[in-house]
Figure (tube, one colour):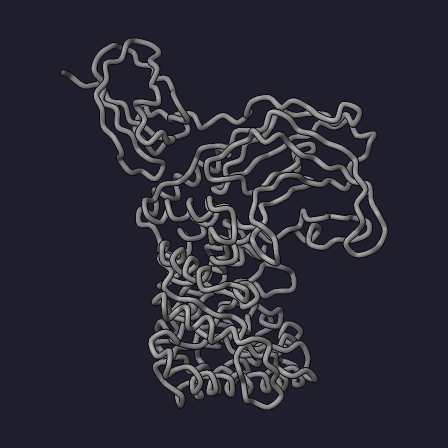
Length: 555
């Protein structure tokens, strides 16, 4: 974690202005049970971090061509059924809270298997866009008068990805022309309805083998923009795909630049914005429960640490006019998750400060073999269950607990969210299905807080007869002053309650206290003796980790 803190500090100092979060996506299944009070609380929390816009992603959908469309509003279109009237609900509460709403258009979920170079797939896509045009007209006639300032535009739900066909220039051109033809039909419809209503869409790019490379992806978008009649009000919100696993913090910067360059080469149309992902998708090997690898919850989709999210913000603001996220209410709301996630995010957005207080560890870890029935069959499996004493602590909560074997994370459990009847709480156990009773390897537990700071335990061997182990103090050491190369000589780093200053000569010294984001919080003059001097909590503003400058002065 030392390298993480150093890299993050460098990043924050390189980007002195904190980015804003302008909007968020939301899905109907999440808010379908919210009452009026919950809506008020959720919107108040959104506005606390600056959110002014919501994209409702799923107005209508179907899974195959033989099904009726399931609509989240009372549609009178042919071949539609009412799923629930969630559209009226969100517009009503957004109007009360002063939040703008973009309504997503229909999504035929066969989209994920379509290759628009193939005639049959293109015909089905054309039929789906016809439905989107009809939905747009109906939504406008149903809601625009009552929610004139709230209902602000439309969102095309189809997520364009960098299709492998784009690596072939001829096939790429066919794909771009066909995609543009259908987008133009939708834009033409919106121009007739109300030319002031923008169209938003959110593509993504992956570096997987089944995807086009970055050069051919940019070539596709440049050609697509040439054919498509986007307007200045329309917005492209590329997903950074870090949560989805298609990109990383190291790779997303050039791919974000690729989207921005393609738009710039089209005279800035459509607007280039951003959609940053606030979640962690499990690795493929941990994504599904199977009879041979019963995971029993370790694959729970989790919220991203705020430290990672902050780095995503810093990258996005280089290329985006506005920044959206998928999705605040799902992963960062204090009403749907442990509240420290929202607290850390709010603190950063309001002050630029980061949280570097490492969690304290529990004193004991306990373990036992238990029998659990697989989620997918009636067979049972013997798995190792680990719990820990309740004396661990972090003021903003524990996001995740990892189990390490030979330095590799082999199991984990995340905090739960208030979805589908769950109650949001910190992880209180984890299961390791691959443990063997003959295994005498040393393990470690890692406790990760909502910012992303991780404290690892001392190594321990599992002795089932004993049933528990004592854990020693936190083995992490904070960054030493020699690693803070961005500051002047004799810079010290204060963590927790006290530190020491070593000076060559006694005398008066000026000590300047800075937050990790470089904000000056306190200036004091102290008499220091030659050699080691203790700097205690009373000299540390707000009792937070600080970087300090020390300068000899005359007095």
